[in-house]
Amino acid sequence: MTPARDRGAAAEPRPPLALVAEDGAIIRLDLCRLLVERAGFADVIEAADGEAAVALAREHVPDLVLLDVKMPKLDGIEAARQMLAERPLPIVLLTAYADAETVGRAAAAGVFAYVVKPFREQDLLPAIETARARHREFVELVAATRDQRSVEAAKSLLVQREGLSPGEAFVRLLVASKQSGQPLQVIADAVVAAFNARPRQPAGG
Image 1 (tube, helix red, strand yellow):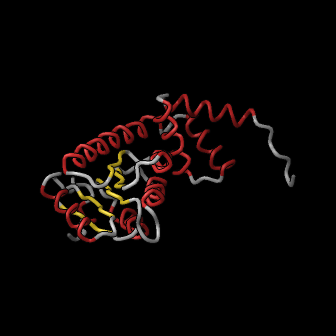
Image 2 (spheres, rainbow, N blue to C red; image 1 turned 135 degrees about the horizontal axis):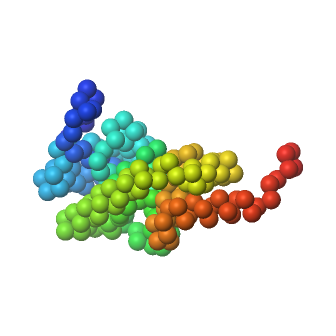
């Protein structure tokens, strides 16, 4: 499967593109086949490690990302965090570990769905649909809240006080909204109130 993104036709809808990052060649090929034959993707780009996955996601902006958790150079959860710090993407994690720590790290990164290995086709396809549906909701939420002052104020405070990038700050707010079930506006107001209640550290102190 080869990358096939037509940069000259950005105004036209492009066929759906997926990214598969998995260091096991046989599993990776099986996933590519399944995505094309059963999930409706026109093309799949492949990565064998987390660093390559992040670079390919930045270059091609795929419509779906499948990430194995255990990969060389950069694990799947950290790769997902870096991707989502730049832009929202529908990401499904593939993991042999369903322990609380792994699940918690995945949720904190903002991943939309995960599947435990060994998985079956009937496990993976619903997870893909779930991730894409949640991503659509995520994008709609971003569009609806982009200009809200409290959200921008909360992002700014997280950037200034916590050293996050604007993308990371927004992902943190969205993850908190998703985990708490509270609207993003409520989470942003709470962040602003919490920072305003903290005494500022004196300069040089």
